[in-house]
Image (cartoon, rainbow, N blue to C red; front, side):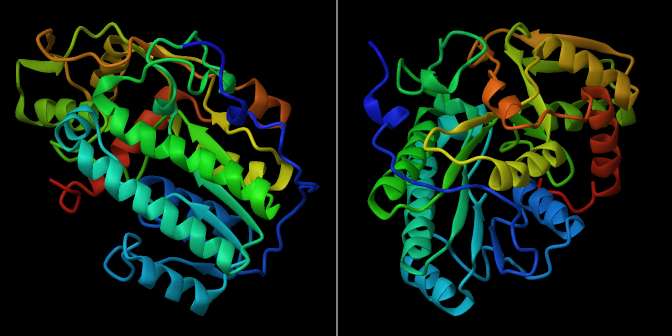
Length: 334
């Protein structure tokens, strides 16, 4: 499809801003503060000494309701914002409800970003997803690969919404001169994840499947696909630390990849999960089900240049996540 369009890394950006420590006493709104990412960011901000955090559950504030969002910003007037609210799900959910993933996420983004502009938010970080990149992008994927090829069909609607969010941030920088930024995390996991049978991503789905099999004494577990695709996994607490680091150390129109820079096969991650939960049976693979993207490994050079690298190892992260899952098994989404 040729070279990336000009606005992927926009040389029209004229923002002049020197990042530095955020004021711990200023109001900070975390959109989606009860989700996997938002709750981790909230924990990190509390640990870092932020004293005026603001969050609203979806029952308290429907971010798809434009008037309600504008009223919320008029009332609370946050100085800083992390937009971590989104409709998310795994292959099955994305494949089954593409309209919902496109429509809901576009409305959430447009409403929050427009309201934040109107009410003078100083610093904002928009969180996307590594699924924004072409299905067959060269590995590891650089930020410049955005819009250079066809998307993965199983989650293209969600990806388009997130791409729109990146370009929205770039447009705000050009039109209003605001030093807002975007970060694109790789596959995430950790406490607070969605472990439901129909809406979860691959790793929480594997944790639930193998844990239930271990508890029931099942002889085998069957996973989707061939097990050969490669995936990168980042603990959500690492992501939260990276987000604050970027807010305080990075500015620019290009999105920043956030990951570990290493990947494993789905088969390898399944073996690790089985070992961590204590499942000793057989693993089978249903090759009639889709694999998704063959490989998705992010180039994290830009993040490293900004002074940050991931700290939580995969097996250690999995063990703590399994502990959290078992402690909350009675209250998680079914």
